[in-house]
Image 1 (tube, rainbow, N blue to C red):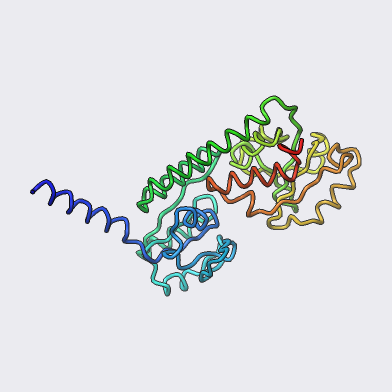
Image 2: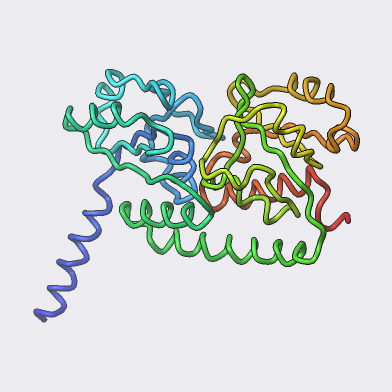
Length: 274
C-alpha cells in the first residue's frame, strides 16, 4: 500500500512539474517551431513577427533582436524561450534581471546539435518521449534520402544569406550539412565560422555549379539578376541560380531540417525524377 501511495505521489509531482508552463513566449522561429512539433501550441501565447504560426494566431512581441520587453511583461508569461544564436545576450540578461523565467537554447553547428537542442527542450517541458520519436523517425527518413545520393557526383554550391555585404554559410552553420543530401560541396565550407562575409570576386574564383539564395534580410530575387552578370560562373552558364525561402532552410528543428532537404532536392531535381 505504501509503495502504491509513493508511486501516486511521485506521479502527481512529476505531472505537475511538467505542466507548470501554461503561458509561454517564444523569441525565435526555431523555438516556436519546436513547440509546435512537440504539440505545445495552446501554451504558446506569443512570439516574434518572424515566427510562422500556420493556423495558429499568436500575439506578436516584436522582432528576434528587438523584442518588446514591456509587452512581454504585460502578457504575464511563466516561461520565455530564447536562443543564443538569434537573441542578443543583453536582452536575455535584462529579462532575467526582471525575474522572468528564461530558457535559452544553445547554438546549432550541425544536424546533431539540432536534434540535441530539440531533445533538451523537450526534456525540460516534459515531452521527452515525443521528441525521441520525432528524432528517430526523421533520422530514418534522412538516412533513406542520403542512401540515394551516396555514389553520385557532387556539385560545388555557393550559399548566399546576405547581400550587402555578401554573407555565406561556413563550416560552423547547421545549414552547411544540407549539402550532404543534395550532392553538394559548399565552396566556403572550410571557413571556420557560421556566416562569413566574403567578396563577389571570391565567389567568381570558386566558380560554383549552383548558387542558392536564401530569401532573408536583403537577399531577394534581385540577386539573381546581379549574379547573372557574371557569365563565366558555371551556375550562370547552366541557369542554376535558385531562390529559397528562409523558413524552409533556417528553422533548426528535426522536422524542418528534413523538410529543408526535401525542398532543396525538389528544387535541384534530385531523387525520383533523376
